[in-house]
Image (cartoon, rainbow, N blue to C red; front, top):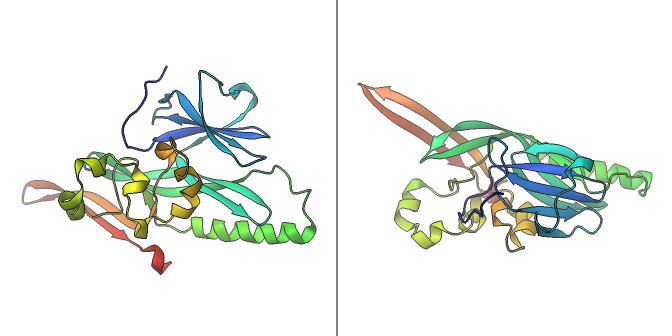
Length: 232
């Protein structure tokens, strides 16, 4: 059984189990091992989010469709239903201060409702337009994240202002809101105690990390450019 993780880091990977009435999101590490005694349950009918214990209510994995995901981008409510947005693929950019930095390369927008038969033809058209607009934004290159390192503050700012208490805050709480592009989408997770490790701050911009050699001296060069949400 997995030990309780008391760090402020976000979980590295998840298994998403989908059933007609529920989503189950189980924390995993990079190699696929379970890292928590609890999981996130999302009711696809009511939209309710709950942190549940494996010991009290095991996930019915044998009945579910399994998707391996890198993280949760957030949840959104459109005119005719709720949607779960997940990170399906991400490329490793490099390692900074011992933390891996990733570039989001594929997302998926998953509807809570399994069918649109309850909608009129006009409602289906409007709903598809809303989803297409979100997909267009998510397909933009330049979304980056780290489950351990704060990309929204400069290294200088962190060295001068990050107290031990600050570093113990959940990732989303200590992130600079000007550079967190999924803060609104992640707000349903942030609002529930115990879900901080599911709540991943995502920035938009550019991250480049290179190992360099100059005159026989090895060093790491990192360039981080952040785009403010006020300049969307």
